[in-house]
Amino acid sequence: MRRTIVVNGETWEVYPSGRVTVYGKDEFGLVFQQGTGPERKRRFTRYAPLGSRSRSRSRDAALAELSERQRRELLAASQPAWTSPEASYGAR
Image (cartoon, rainbow, N blue to C red; front, side, top):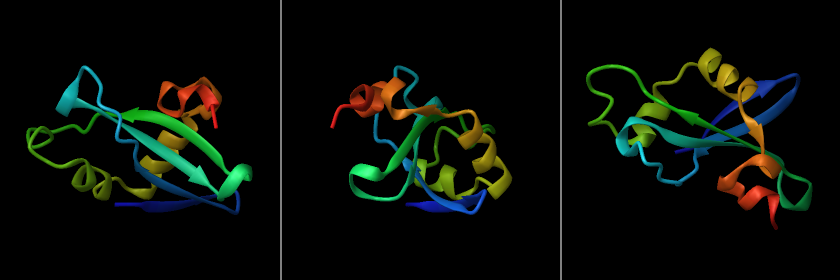
């Protein structure tokens, strides 16, 4: 599942990174992507859903429940691709 947010007039797609962490079902990675091709911007963060049902929900369901405000906060706390293992530290 992909969601979008608009920040400062720029549209960002948000989706699970697919990277599995040692925390398994407790947290997962999110990718924020703007644009396509070599000019695209990518940022990464981790998200830990809260609540008693969080372990039984899929990543897509947890992402679907995030409000736009929460997605904006996660983007603000994200790190650029060149500093992230999910993006092989920015390797193309």
